[in-house]
Image (cartoon, rainbow, N blue to C red; front, side, top):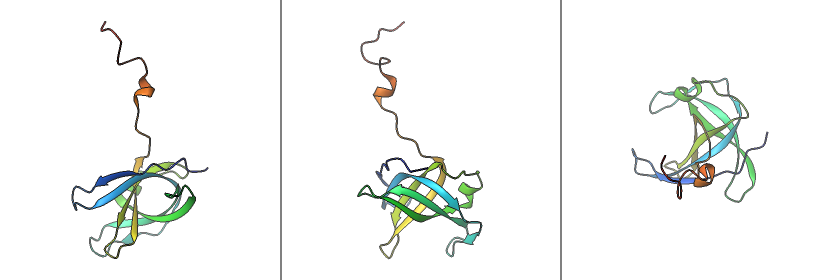
Length: 120
């Protein structure tokens, strides 16, 4: 399966105040190995993801996926919400969640429900 067009959404991390981006990424595989975060002790696994970079090119990259997410049950070939942030050294960090990535609905999805309709 090929990842759909990647949609990057800019946001500010409420906890850190840092800029980050959320986007959809296709889960290719999840490592069986569990790693403990050196700072927090929280467990995570390495996920292999496919998505399109900002140039529109398909890429395959690694991301962290914490136990709180992978314990929910994840399936390969499904797109999940992923967050891009910058580490202290300036390199990108990817964090995959268990939340399915879906595009935000638009008014076109509900054509005719709003606007010139009269209340019944």
